[in-house]
Length: 248
Figure (cartoon, rainbow, N blue to C red):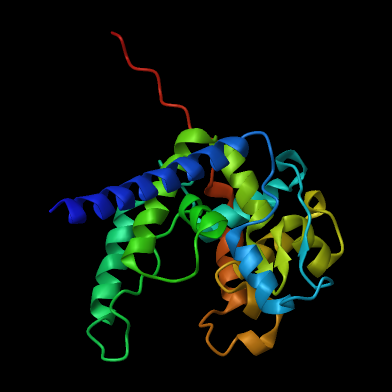
């Protein structure tokens, strides 16, 4: 039995070492900006291979230089209670589980596919460290990284990293590159309509950028933009403080 115990111990140690690496990397980002994400590197390789010059754009913009219009629009589009939850939305994950269980009943549907239910923190965890492969092991690692992100970094810092790293088109990453690519202006100057349009792109950014990617995208951007505009006023850009307890 010793020959079984040794590789098991090695596997456990390897998994623990990986989590420590993730935690240390996240801790560095409390003061340093990520140079790139796993998703950005994968996309750069897909688009550029071994070429040094490549049409991949990214420009870091500090949180206070990003339009509040854009911040609110992204929250409506992706995670309207981001500043209130602890990283996951259990009810949404349960709905995603049920949807995937139904999908797995069809012959051509992969049984390990996961869809929906992801918060901004979960999306950030996936983009920063993980592959685009969808299975339950990767989802489990995503949840662990999500917990580390929420534990180590503030909500504002998480949102800042997300806005500066998320994909907004083919080879377009972060709001600095996106606002310049689509409108030729800095992120601070985005008005309501521009912010809502950019936020509507997030579920299918390549389709928003280039029609050739729209064959598999089932999304109507004008309708989504209208919904975002109607709901931007109800989202909070900071944690809502708890009401003081009545001591009487």
